Length: 151
Image 1 (tube, helix red, strand yellow):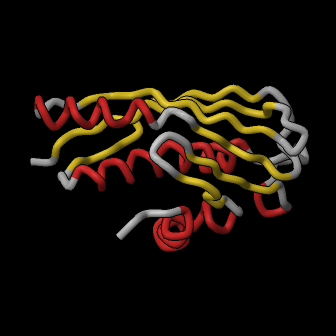
Image 2: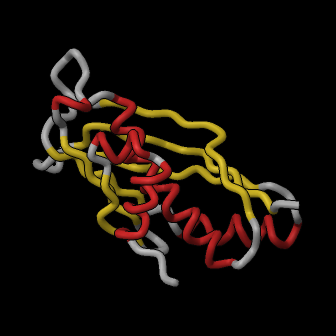
């Protein structure tokens, strides 16, 4: 069964309900790129009348994690994945619809090949950039994913 953004959004509803209720939705997914959106609303705001940083983080992480989990599934192997580190930069108030894009999918296959070949865990840094409707960057998130064969 092929994985697509609709199936990932169903997964989010059942397994990550806080992201779902905050409005995080995956819009596009392939092996190299993922796009998620979230709209500033009363429910996901901070006291400064913009989107709470953690809501932005959920959307950003979804773009990276969806690609990692999909590529793991495509290997047919039992491989665990976990965020080991992350950092973020906030450059403008996040209001309106924010679109997060990650184009680091090309890094995943190489890490999976290495962990399958060696049995050692591998790490990869992936970046997701959030822009508002004017195309202005509001935040940039970096996630260090670890992948490892399950024993």
